[in-house]
Image (cartoon, rainbow, N blue to C red; front, top):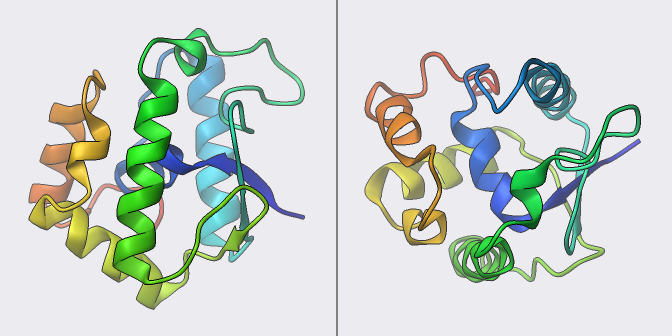
Length: 141
């Protein structure tokens, strides 16, 4: 199986600590973080993904809001540059130890954060990064 993720959600899972827009969102996001932590690959999609539109729940309004497509484009470009590989819809990525470490180091340094512009979770994500991702559900491997 694979987790369908839009590009900016690759950044969200780096700092996810079990908080979200609603209890249903949090349950779904926690399950996705556990799947990714177990080595399940992410399939990059354009638009709504398994976080936005879980199979057994109503769509999440935040995924269709203004700026989300731009956030995806910024995240994709920055992650591609960092990892030196394409990250187009249909590509797969595994958040293994080295990849997760590179993404988190770049996020902590601020290299990926411009893709987070306008996100209401920016402050929380910054706090998680500042504490070394200790509370993040996606563990370093």
